Amino acid sequence: MSPLPAPRFLDATTPPHVFTLTFVAAAATLSMNVFLPSLPGMALYFEVDYRVVQLSVALYLCMNALMQIVVGPISDRFGRRRVILAGFAIYILATLGCIAAPSIEVFLSFRMLQAAVVVGVVLSRAAIRDMVPGDRAASMIGYVTMGMSIIPMIGPSIGGILDQSFGWKANFWLQAGAGLAAMLLTWRDLGETVTPRPGGFRAQFQAYPSLLTSPRFWGYCLSAALTSGAFFAYLGGAPFVGSMIYDMSPARLGLFFGAPAAGYLVGNFISGRFSTRIGMTRMVLWGAIITAAGLLMSVALFLLGLGSEYVFFGFMTWVGMGNGMTLPNATAGMMSVRPELAGSASGLGGALNIGGGAALSAFAGWLLVPGSTALPLLLLMLASSLLAVVSILFVILRERRLGL
Image (cartoon, rainbow, N blue to C red; front, top):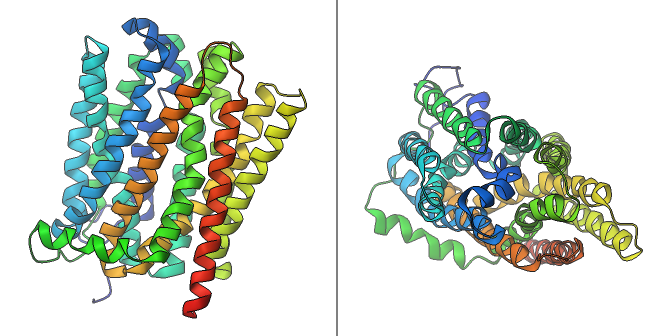
């Protein structure tokens, strides 16, 4: 493959600028968490139980996972640029549908369509892998996710303030505006980074068996899925913990809810600064250990009767830091197994990641019932993070056997 030209900002004949990749991924991330402080109020608006409106998280993640399986091969076939533009167009229309929804059933249908925005996350990573190799890709992904981590840090706070001032629909107007801005920036700056692969979709999907039969691919996938699984369980259960257990207002819950993102920012900086020097696999290991350690300390304090909203949300910064170290490096590891299939690897790995997250998010919502404490959620998150440590240790042993 011939080397790509140097990026020039707002020049669609060159590869995308790092700002564009960051903004596109951040706009996609906004859809995940900005409205979460509104969930209790949305349950009242649609006159349904909290568990029903919480499906807007679990169903979105399920659809997100399914779409990741598709968008990777499609982008390998048609190119990153066109698929990103199409995905954001669908997302904007779906967001407007959420705003106009007359019932919870219609709302959840459009909410699932919003998952088309996953193109922003999947294909920004694939574009990076198109542009740079191996450990350099992990480093660049770390810097991009460091920039986009500002969104999950401030998103819930903004969402809580918007909800308290204008109602829950204001959060979806914000999403529509961000989606439109990302689409325009993509059109103006994101030059194609991959030469479209010949053949039909069958040829693209035939790439999956070669990935699924790779033990290293599975090890990287599981370490990412289980580390981020702790965070997805948090997404599903933390609104209940904050509003129902600790009686927090939407604005205050939004402020506390962003605690993991503060740690994520630090973890992404560490990835960007040290991944090339330390190596992808060891960075994943340390990220998984940090996640598990933070949750272990939180569980210990709750068992000692010292639990509070400050303990619960405070130790989530460790979860964020661990995810910030694990995910960029595990993602680069997945794509390094077959570099020529970066889009397919990013999509398939992301699907497995989000699919597991959807299951944990739904399970977290099921665990928390009126009268429960935060401890069941913390134990679920701890179990997920410990399994992530086991998964990356498997990769380390496998690479030693292969002499990598």
